[in-house]
Length: 339
Image 1 (tube, rainbow, N blue to C red):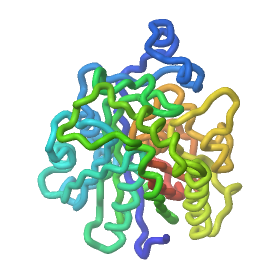
Image 2: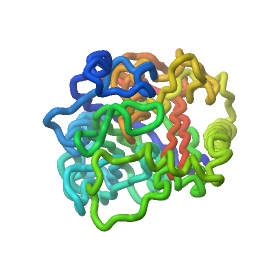
Image 3: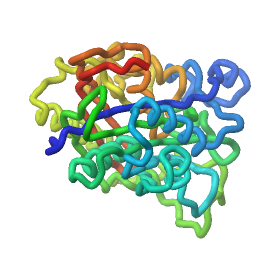
Image 4: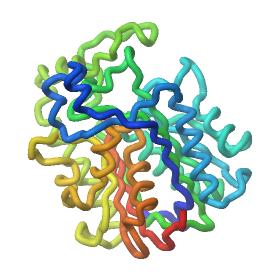
């Protein structure tokens, strides 16, 4: 879809804790054989900083870079994949209060790894209605043991900790959103549930048995053809957003994709999208790991801070989340920031 109002990105920020090399973790027996050769060199690990505080730090950077007054922000969406520090708590309000103040409407968005991209799409849609002139999208995840095993809890992933932020405006910015597209296949939801019965409270099993649930579903007839369905939806949102903008894959300078990697010369998500590694943001992903809901925002911030995109460059951001939901957003860099 194209938005009736021009929606700009006006600030980005990322908080990354120190990275931990993968090789020592392999030597220590923390990483099983299936996760040893995925291509990750290190992952970001927060020892003392909570998920929401990493999001706050990233948000403060994005808001400062935007140059917009805090009271102009009418919406704050906070996305996460994992535990935010407390049960039954409004983490989005915490992030908003500590970055843009008390007045913004704050909501938590949870659609697994697509949460950040889904929130970006929702925020742009909200701004396009005229309900506000600025919005803040944040993510924050910390995958701490023993409740979560960052080294082996998901296919093709080692998990890293981070906070990310993107500030949007209808008035000014360094890039404009040309189009955004979303899709879903809710019939794929059992990949995250398997045959595991529902519990009455969180934290009853540690670490969370994500791969066990996936294995349970993989053994059922309903799982047949799932990967083809996922790939079809990824290409659907890619094709829709490019068509709405009137451009082709060859016109896109860089792609900010999930930091999920199969390694071993297998086809990767950026290959499926039609770009290859050099146009992807895997150069960052291999250093920090899969950042939950924040891969794409961190990738975009990486491209901007290192001057890897310039005026007129198109950047495609693509998200996929277990459930399954899919988002693609196409940006045109108009006035590169001088951060």
